[in-house]
Image 1 (cartoon, rainbow, N blue to C red):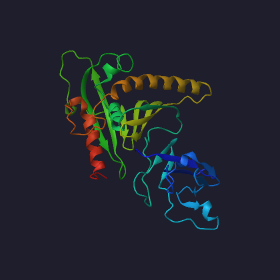
Image 2: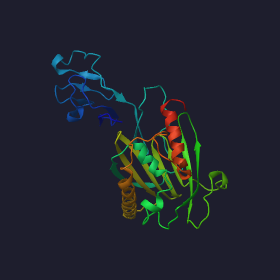
Image 3: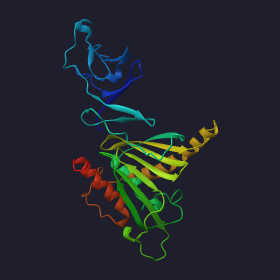
Length: 303
């Protein structure tokens, strides 16, 4: 989100995420070291606990209480599902559940691939909701078969708790043999699980099978850079075979997402929205839905 941060743990293993800037003279705390249950500024030895409260100013003596103004902004964090979630808003007494896909059982294992994309995070997300590009960008991988005609697609929204929004997407691409694509309203009501899901909080799932999923978390670095965490979930828990499955899945994910990255990073403008001049088509309806909800959330018009 355009802010430099420092993440560290105290002796109890408690995680802290705070602004990477000492309020004294502006030095990066990440260049310092851990001492006891505090992080120490490398410039003058000021020490801060996990809440960002200054606990020691060496120059003033260990028996002198530090000034209240010496406080580093810290963010509420939660560790779940192997991720660190950040609460970006103002602190509150209670926080909503961490965004996740309840359909992924705890019995599944995963391998993680991390990759950097030089674009706004919402462009990366929209690419995973784009069903029109498959036979072109992925003509020799997941888009094989030249199914260029896009029926629908069907995209729906669910809300499970305050602030939660889940998009479900069903894909019905087929060969173009001269027929007209069907509108979403002309498609039968889906009688199977979604093909793709996106949950605000920037996580996406390709629900390939009950025992096989691909999950992507989109971590925004700044307006023109995103860190992608791609996970390959499977059910093989036997040692060696588990590692082999993870390696094969990660390699496949890398090949496919690099096909996307080569094209998506060229999109202009970097930050998309509803009124940026793009001429959208019926097959772009999931992207339009994503943009409408995103704008409403930003403007505070949607719980």
